[in-house]
Image 1: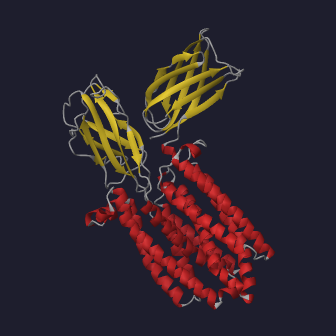
Image 2: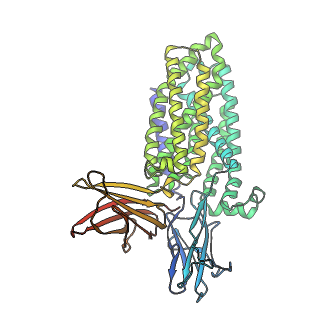
Image 3: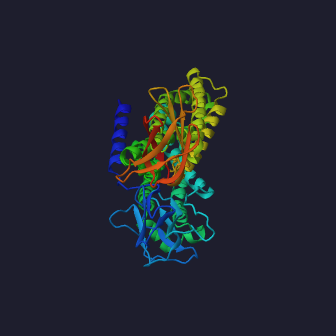
Length: 551
């Protein structure tokens, strides 16, 4: 009965935390549209340039400047975020700019705290694209996780997981007799102190770390008062960091009382657990999850994913720390009973990890090909493989606990824990990499028609700006279709209302047609309509849904 009451209380507290936290907006910002667009040729000098991103951008550490081919700045030095639409950054230009090539150099910080910068070239008047006649390509790059970030964020994940795991094990898994053992309590007290100290350290240091990331400065300048003030007042991370520091203050008091009373006062255990879980929730507000169109759903899934992983890995740390105790004759049975009792919770955490992981992937992976084509997909694939390895170790440990067998238990527990620690490292990298939505890779799609013929569409590199479009036509026997008079492609944005673009493809050989164009002028979902006209004046029409990347 107490178990049900406590479980219900925990669910109520988690629900309150989930729905009462401030609704900050976070995004990994990428270009949807720019005016002028990449390598666009304008007849007359524009009054201003603007770039629209897929989500809101932060008011701190942004810039937009325009330079001519000689490197002279030609904007009015008034770069700013559009007060009406905070996903747009713009600046005015000097009047009557002469014909020539220009570059928009921009930098913004997305709401998840990652800087993104790039260059967008354009031209005024006809003539060479630049002085040597070559074409300047758009560049866009985001933040790549460095070693300092990986170590500090990993330390936060591990210490938070350990803190939550200790309290979870004490409340829900430890046999009552085992929980009162003096040696067990001493080990748990030491663990809770160490995990709290490292949790404090990682959160405190995370502010100057984030300052180095968002301001693209060194650690030497990250402690500048103005930079830190800007971080706290004008960035999403700064707001979350303040909440984390407030939580740590309360957590210090409850952890101290918990330690003084040697876990004999359940109220301090429960409050400490809720505060530790609350700190996990704040991490979800600085993840990719908050950048979706339905942040409540995605943040909730990300939080449950992180919570279940923390309980799993944190509990493993407790098992390993308590393993020497099982050598005592009177403690062996209690220890093995703890392994068996955790099995049902282990199954629940694995189910939650699997369900939330699969659902979350729909918001960050546009297609299965992205798992091997993009950096984000590769790291995610590695994380999935390691989770399967963890499940194998967990199954072995479950069977050992069920049979009350100690043989090889320490090694398999360490194997499961070590794999989990590596999973957390990959989780840190994933949180700080652009999702695969930013770079879904080339398109390679096939449509089979009712008569058995097939239409194949290739798009390379499938990003905003210049792309190569290729259409292959084959009959039901797989041979190239002949007697084609003309093939056109019509591009329709599915993200916003704009005029359609149509291009005609050139024949390369029988059944193969190709063209190059700048018809994808924004990231997101597009419909590509293929229209085929045969020499007998018959038509073939089909549509392809394409997700266009921003870099």
